[in-house]
Amino acid sequence: MQATRILPDLQCSLICEEVRQESNGNLFLIGVLTILRVPELPIVAGRLCIFNRWTAGVGQFSESVRLIAPDQTTVISKGESKFELRDPAVSATNVMVFTQVEFKTPGVYYIEVLVDEVMKVRYPLPLIHAPLPNQASGAPAAPRTA
Image (cartoon, rainbow, N blue to C red; front, side, top):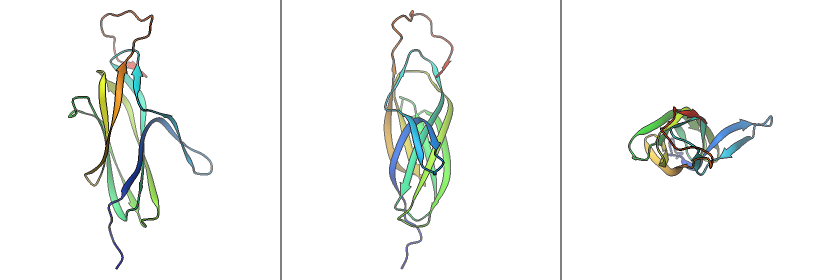
């Protein structure tokens, strides 16, 4: 008996500045992020990419990616996509692009990745406010674009 549906495994999830495709079809990630260090707050990230690779599943699936604020309840950005795996030996790569993401406070933000509403991973993305040495302290500025 052949399985008609197997929930896939998340092989990897990485947040980066950009994902590009070479002429041979291979993908390369630019600016893989482990921490966000910003000179002022609030700040707007023009583009954040979440690279997810799924494998070892069979069927059609719905992927959800959420960026959660440090209060661990507020959803800053979210996106959904659908994908299919016809054989457990193949993989599917999804890139979720979040644009114009406003970060208002320092703290630990979280990336959550779900498939068919089942949480597969939740990982931290710390944001540290590190003013430039010559930056004068004062009233908060208008949101800046990163």
